[in-house]
Amino acid sequence: MKISGFSYVRNGFDYGCPIIESIESVLPICDEFVIAVGDSNDGTREAIANIQSDKIKIIDTVWDMQMRQGGKIFAQQSNIALDHITGDWAFHIQADEVIHEKSLPKIIDALNANNNNKEIEGFILPFLHFWGDYYHIRNSRRVHNYEIRLFRNEGVIRSYKDSQGFRKYNNLAEYETNEEKGSKLHVKKIDAPVFHYNGVRSKKLMAKKSNNFQAFYGTEEFVDQKAETFGDDYDLNWVDRVAKFTDTHPLVMKDKIEQNSFRFEHDTSKAVWVKFDKWLQPIEDFLGFKMGEYKNYEIIK
Image 1 (cartoon, rainbow, N blue to C red):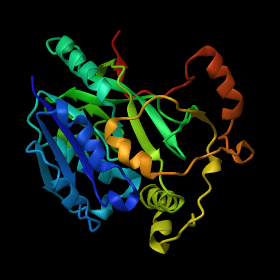
Image 2 (cartoon, helix red, strand yellow):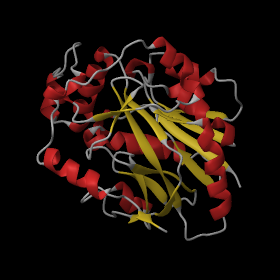
Image 3 (cartoon, rainbow, N blue to C red):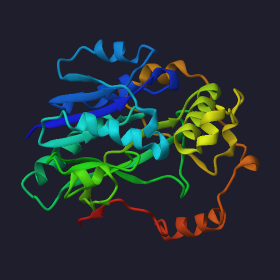
């Protein structure tokens, strides 16, 4: 059984992504790691090339900004890396995601236990969405609890929409033209959390990330005007809800965490709740599940 890690990135350092730590966190269980590196000018490619491992293969790409709407470029870059892996299992990790070393044996055990069961097409992992600092996680109904990060490398699975998840397609040509919507993968859960450091950046970088999000998901008018909706004094307090995180972080994150002295304290008076979430949240907390949760997969018990 061969495991191939794959990812994509462009100017990861400029956006405060722990891309090196991300790669290094999964390398121990990967036989190879393929990463599509976009046309970067911040030293991202050089840093990846300097990782001391012969498992890493870099695919140089140039991002086609005509594909930015709806985040389609992210799926394209993900697929470029996916097309170059050779393993039996594909392990996808994004530039702001890190896996704890204590989870690696659980992943190997799950793959070994299900390798011959073709009914299982992939696995979903739980997510810890860090916000403000390394000691708080966003835990409202607005964040996804699970996502596909491991699946069989059988050539018919492609990145779905903006690369958040994956689906199986009968006709890859129709996938490219959005004529085929694909079918959801049959998956199992692995208790191996993805440490998602999306919300742990300086206020300046959070502002830059938010502006970039608008450029890829906003209107053409926004992009053309190069508007800046967030200044350097980005207010982290708009987040709806956070909880304290008291467990350990992956060892690869040790230096980054020690270098970050900022501590976030949530001013809940500034929290922004979407629509009826403020009333739905306590109901879901009591019931223990998210009502109407979108799941881009079919769970096999």
